Image 1 (cartoon, rainbow, N blue to C red):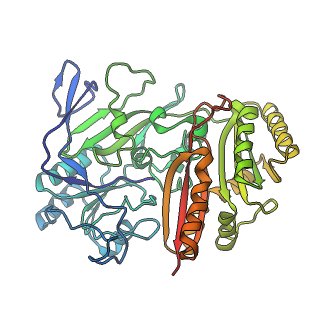
Image 2 (image 1 turned 60 degrees about the horizontal axis):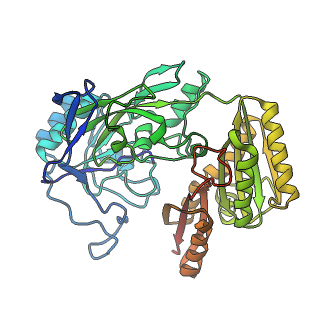
Image 3 (image 1 turned 120 degrees about the vertical axis):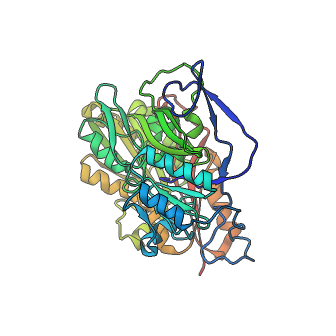
Length: 471
């Protein structure tokens, strides 16, 4: 989340993508409203996930050999400093945080950090690197948990941190257009002042960038209500590997004029181009928000609670998250957070969001009465005030932070059939035995953008399986 992956220029056979993003692109020939986008010369510098800090060449977990890219020369630095005065960083102390991932498990050796402010500057950087055969690692907020946001070797880090301006916002349609380096929380604050919200919310919102969210197709806590970024992102501006600018920054919800080219870049993780600007559809800020924090005795009861929740809360259901007792223990141990209810094997965070407080509270009350009387839920508490809502959400959002205090973390964000999700955690515990300090499960339950569809609600959910190796 919040990151891009690096580019590697390889001599591949040319491939062409035909699109109908007409007058919006620069440096590309238009043919009957069609553009030819040639970007197959760049592919990912792979094997990122296997890198481990301190790995040796004989270690199978070590990075692969460095590919035949050029080294940065004095002439290259002179070009960058002329283009980005005061924004070409070579000080090792300043580079250190950009070379290490958020979990501090993998580390690169970049000697140059570039901080452009405009799309044109990104274009010139990539054009120069393409001509010089210099490897590039685009980087957003560097909040990713799988090592994809830092260099493998000495790639040039291209940071979008200074590309943080809101370009336009239409308070009638709710369409926001901004640069890729805007921090998600800053965008949320900007929109809330205008009675709107972002369609996604993440635990890393204080640091992650919207460009990285789009590049990794981040889901987040609001996916159940507002759907994925493939539906809410309306347009993108992207710089291709050779420096050409592809501008498909549409601000219309309906566009049936041809190929939906932006979908190639959503979730592409930097393999096709660097996202420099985003237009996104933002929903109105709900007038009433409630959060319920519940405990369940088994995962089966948790799933049955989810079924009941979808049926009884319907259109006001905004989020349904879970984590297990091991997560709660780590939150209490390392972050000194307090469990607000009786100790349980599983915990649920449910959020409702609507336009009528009385209506929403009545529906939530009936739901809670149903799950309590049927013994699906053993204990629970409800928050309606902003401060208490934030406190309950912090229990879910800070699980990843708590895990970092336990040592080295293997983190897997995966999707499985809903009834099989926690089997993975139990199987891993049995397989690893005392080799692991903890194996925990937590994440989103439900990934549908239509919360009122009834019992045929979903096929898979996403969790993170975290394994702390014994020291």
